[in-house]
Length: 533
Ligand code: UCC
Image (tube, rainbow, N blue to C red; front, side):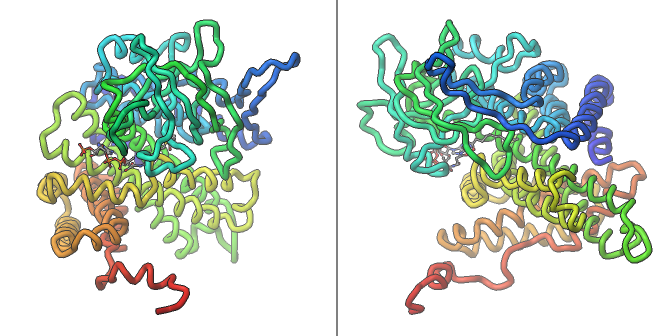
């Protein structure tokens, strides 16, 4: 209902008509995959390092959903749709509607797809034309035989957040190429044909992330042998267990620089911004699945003489989750539309500034929200929610990845501060006013009051306070902009009362999460002072 409602109000009729058959097919596949997955024991990828005669092969055996992943990605254009011109500024809306329907059924095949999309976007932004011509058509292909997948190799043992500590070295070969030496500690898509990797060019005098270069690695040579890559082991993770996340060594891996072999973080930023949006879309998809399961269960489960539907507290609990999910959905898909507009040079300056802020904001808020929603929905099943064969434990385990990868909540909260510091608060306020131009007056009042509070807080805080409270500031801003996005939708919803009901409930729980009184940042450290001094 929420997806259909948004499609009806946000997309032109011609786009809607063109994409509907694919969305219907993806929806059907999602339902069938859920039933199929519940009926079998879970299968996990396997690393086979040696063949029978003792040769090192490092082959990864996939799960059934992963063996089907490429064909589905090509057939439904899960990466391609975002890069094609048929629907103009609505290309990202089309693409992310597909991703939203497919994510849970894909068993996290969406992870390599997100990175492939991010790689295509980053290459278009910074690479030389020959690299773009060679790689981008493969990454955005709708033909399974030519489709390439890309990894994003950043994280090393020194840290995942502080990428400036990258120790992998890049040595020039003298013919314009490089050889990479080092260890990548979390490589999510080593099954791909290529990866974008950060490495530190040898003999570069610069320090920190400016000195890092961004490199394209093609993972296999023309004979199908690994390109100087050793897979040490697959990670044993809490969730996303179908996804073969690997620890690898690069041992003279041939690579080409993207751009000038410096400014690596700047060059990979377009990739990060795209994968962060995928993260947010997949987080709302997970929320939707969890809530749908819990509401269906409440319709059939009897307790104390009536179904759970007839218990006001149970249904209020689920309705609160639904209201947050609907607000999150509209925030995320608003960001998707802005990305499509920006990529086609149709966005205003305010929209470009807002997109830079909304991307980390949507990622950090929906990541945390997905964990909370998945946890509540497990509880809504009582003991049955704690049992593997009902499917809820897997959703909860998998949800925990959303706040962690692609930048943790705190790292992104600081990024939001940085993104606002440039243009200031004004573009945000102007954009929020545009969103609520025809909205319900009570909603507008609450949204304006929250924006006033956030702006006053920013003005009244020094750098340390802004950093220490960045997370609560980000949650408050995300809630406020989500309310504005949902308010706009509710005003256009053509007689359907449900978006307005969700909005009232969401706003009713308050938009701001800033503390009622200022908390001295130094208190945080003092609280852990062993001497209590
Ligand atoms: O988790 C990973 C793989 C998961 C699989 C993917 C799944 C996708 C979802 C699928 C759903 C199913 S890979 C690991 C991900 N790791 C991160 O995301 C790193 C988190 N850390 C950060 O984001 C940090 O803030 C850093 C690395 C960006 C900070 O680096 P530095 O070294 O301190 O660099 P600076 O100085 O902060 O940034 C360097 C430049 C600056 O440009 P100037 O100086 O011109 O202003 C920044 O403004 O880069 C710019 N910049 C950006 N620009 C930094 N971040 C951005 C950005 N997001 N957008 C635009």
